[in-house]
Length: 332
Image 1: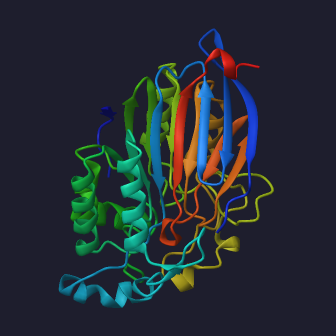
Image 2: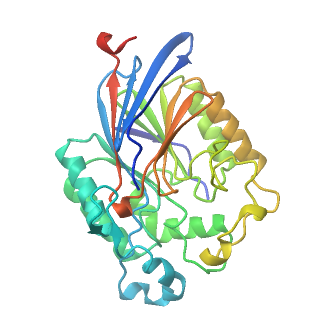
């Protein structure tokens, strides 16, 4: 795995889904076929040269803490009690975030995954103990990983400050080791000919540096996969958020008091976030998008591009994703 970055700046699953879509890189069209059966996802494409296995984990919501977290208990107490015990999405048996995370990364080891994608809300708040525990578990299995933050990873509820400044603060104070010297807000990882872009949209917004970074990556002509925490907006989806949602804003923010954070802006998303949305779905070489955040899996096609969202790992969910060369027997 080779990583590149730009300069740093401040449930249950449906039974089966499949679809076909066509894309073009430079002057050469290529076809991508995607199938989803419970937690198993397969991408077949002419641009995939070698099989790539990815274990996608999001929304573990680890709540563990120790005496170092005592000064912050006023800010962490609600989320510290939110996921202490869960019901496994598949077996219906009792489980918990630590057990679910260990099972997912153990599966990654047993299945010889090329990489683990940790797509946000691995933590319910930036606990030193929880971060150290995850780093130790990842070191023990010795599989490369990609991490981007979710909105809970850096959020101590009720703490004064704007979301961007709080994210920057807790990334630097606690989360930074998870980025492995990469830019926390945007990074590119080359894996067997496919470029995976990890872009942090955990404030629901995209900044100018991230927009320019994405445009630069599209200009390379390489096949791209976008990794984000908050899914891109999908017309008709019954949630009041989604990166690039034209209806997102103060009027649709129902949880700001519960989460003790600033209310979403009166005017909604910035122009930059909307530009990012357009760039994503106008790009000719984007194979797909993976996200988390909503704690239930879904697959949707937006302007011909597949977006796959995982169930929460707190309840045992994860995605087993294979990128597979399109051999003759798969061509239609």
